[in-house]
Amino acid sequence: MAMNDGNGLPVVTPALTRKDFVSDQDVRWCPGCGDYAILAQVQKVMPELGVPREKIVFVSGIGCSSRFPYYMNTYGFHGIHGRAPAIATGLKIARPDLMVWVVTGDGDGLSIGGNHLIHALRRNIGLKIMMFNNRIYGLTKGQYSPTSELGKKTKSTPLGSLDRPFSPISVAIGAEATFVARSVDTSVTHLQQLVRRAAEHQGTAFLEIYQNCNVFNDEAFVHLTEKTVKADRQLMLEHGKPLLFGANNSKGIRMGANFTPQVVEVGDGPGKVPLSEITVHDEHVENPAYAFMLSRLDYPDFPVPMGVYRSVKRPAYEALISEQGAAAQTKRPPQADDMNRLLRSGDTWTIAKPGIV
Image (tube, rainbow, N blue to C red; front, side, top):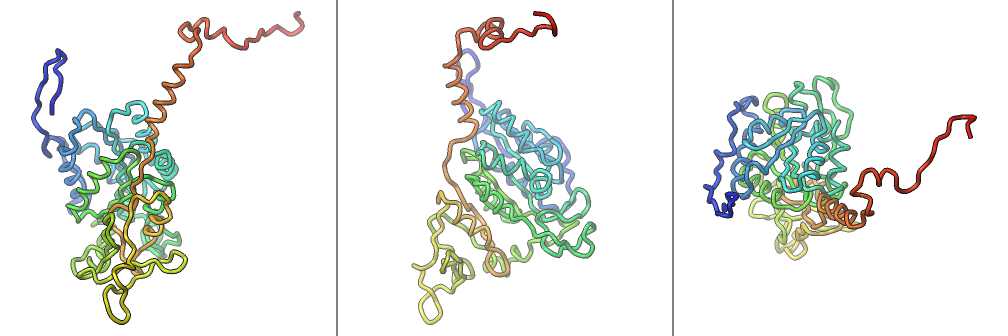
């Protein structure tokens, strides 16, 4: 990477490696936690982005995932419960030159922080948001979370949860996020690809990561990740390619009447559907209805989509603010440079004491 030494002379700095992004802090997650895998993949991708470490900031809220900034050898901010998107928004607006990442969990981001999250998404602020979803409150020892399944028995719901769970992907698409994707902690190569895609996106990038909590919600996603069933229960989204899954891509998703998805057998012969009738994935569809439909596909009726659901282009919020400010500067009145004149410009009032004319 070429840099200037301040005297106009180029200085060549050595390329960064993963080790450059590993901090000197001991990683204090439970042994076997899926967070380790996510941390490793993020540290592997960071050097490829060509962004100096002093230009990268990780912001978190509260939860197991929120220790992430301690383990990245970059700038970081450990915020309070649910407020990471708000803190990160202020930082990105004040310093649009920084690459700002938000690390949150399903509880931190969708419960107390839900409002902050959806407004960051709808504004399209240039944040890279990673939500670690283990469907449980891990840090506070195993209470049900906004993504826990209906009927989930935990310490706080001993008879089973009565709350219908949020789909983080549906929430993000409903807020019209411009980049929405999902991966899983055990799919290391796939996860690296999506972290890279999120980093490259202009505007808000939302990446949900299925993450195993082996202490309080072990094997929450084993029904999707087990090698013997993975092909039948995961739908790998690839732009421009048909929605195929199963062994040898023998199954597919076809749109039926009223935009209703159907699982069909692909091929020639009785009871099968030709490849030409299988829906082709288009992540650039501006209307969020298609991506939202994908977000509603879930096991056991459908395979669970993995990959990029939506990637569309819209102006980033911080760029719009900068343009608006620059335009306002050109319209400043002459007295704006003189505080005394400015305070006495426009409408003024004289306050008289009662009874005195």
